[in-house]
Image 1 (cartoon, one colour):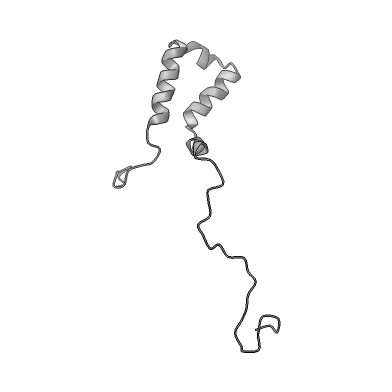
Image 2: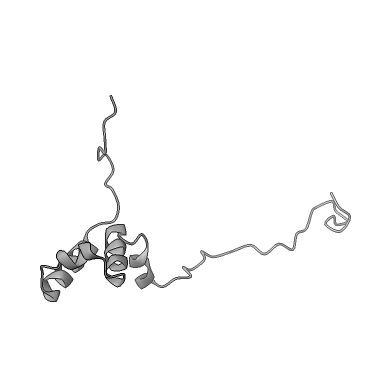
Length: 90
């Protein structure tokens, strides 16, 4: 016990900053949807930017259909439900 923290009665005093109330989230709620971006979508964006031949041959849907597909995927839950079996090792 250091002499600075000891008082005359022997009780240790501290000057540490301690949260008295719950700390609020630093990021806004809208930022949470960007956590864990879909890797397939990111790969598609990179391939399109690089103008790779595989992506040019597969452009089949009109933009409205593609936007609808990505929007539907974005609304899907991003977590695996409890109890879901991923694989079985034998």
